[in-house]
Image (cartoon, rainbow, N blue to C red; front, top):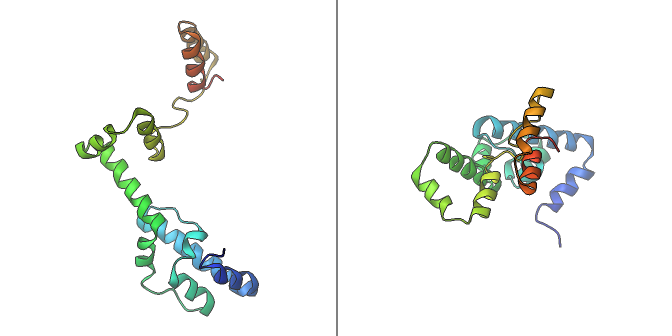
Length: 158
């Protein structure tokens, strides 16, 4: 089954170099403005849903002044803004946000923190010198085997 923007994609693909160049220029401008004004990442697939982007591409008219409103209405943008606001609230210690997360199971809480970018998958970097590595290895030897493997991975030794 085809999606509602397939015709537009076909027009851009078969419209020649000028149409593709217009599409790239329009979408690059929108991607840059979305990052600059709202702090969100967009893809060209997100931009296909914007009527002003499609019109500007096909007619060579300038972007409608309403395109900034269209950016804010994109579902991907709304979700990124919600995520950003939640992360900021958590970092500032907002009790409601923390209470919301505390109702989750530990596994879901950890997954949610990763989604928000609050937990780096590799929390500590690899040792910078031989002495650092030797210190870490000595610490590892005091742990049981399962913890040893987990810590070695976390410390960048494996």
